[in-house]
Image 1 (cartoon, helix red, strand yellow):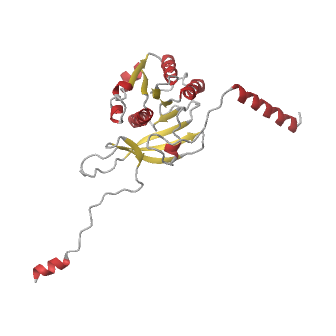
Image 2 (cartoon, one colour):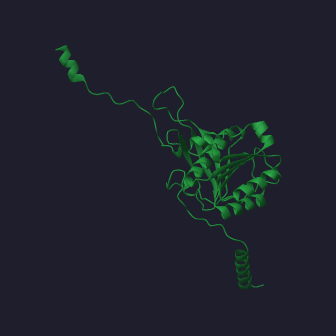
Image 3 (cartoon, helix red, strand yellow):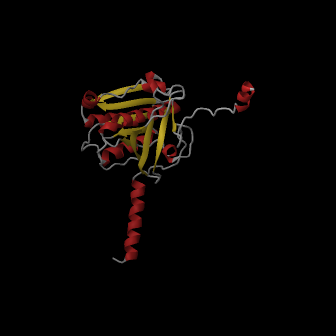
Length: 262
């Protein structure tokens, strides 16, 4: 086969495959999390796409879980939809549960938060795909604490197709060491970061912060940011790069001192 004929055959095959399978719409959209900032960590938070979040090791599980809950809650609040959390019963027993009422602090009605517990991974994926296809679900968290052979490329592709059909945003919480192939639109690595100083009490803990790294994105935007949680507004936002609280500068009172001495 000549190179010219081979290239033409490959192009025809690509066209046939494109007609058989719908393509993901990779559009840059304004994130409903903080309303249109231009950083890729916000800009590429596309609805109708599967996102993955993992920590660096098992100790980062709480940070990754809370970040996923904060992000999903803001999405559900912005879209006025339901928030569904799907977990394994064994993981809930061994590692604890996501604190769902925290989602209410982000503006989500507590009656719109649904907790689902599955007995095995097969049931977990069935429930997650069913929820992702529901038009009333705005965000979905699928929590897994351990790698599993069923959490593969096929399963994530089915979740991606379900999200495309409904416009929901599934967020898959993976184990830190789970490197299985995935069809996710974007993968984030979330680790805890030192909190900001409290502006009212230096001895009190400040705002929660995370170090968020985009490891993989279909739009090619990767990078690393420090993100903090604003308790007053219930929003995620990028933390200042260099923020050191300092007292106000003292006024020059030398003239007053000389007047008192005189």
